[in-house]
Image (cartoon, rainbow, N blue to C red):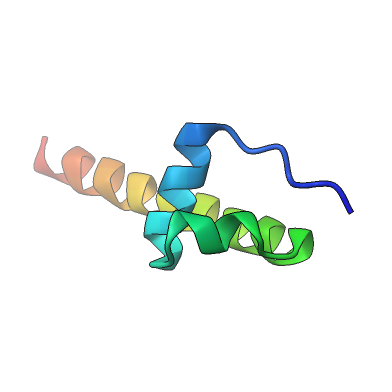
Length: 59
C-alpha cells in the first residue's frame, strides 16, 4: 500500500487535530487518515459558519 500523499502543512494540521505525533500519523492506514481528514474539514467548515453567523448578527 502506498502512503497517502499529504502536504507537509496538511500533515502537521492533521496531527495536531488528532493529537498524535507526526511520526504516528505517517504510519496510519489510509482509510483512517481519509476519515479524520473529512472530520477535520467538517469541523473547520462548521466553525467558519458559526463565526460568520455570529458576525452577521453583530452588524
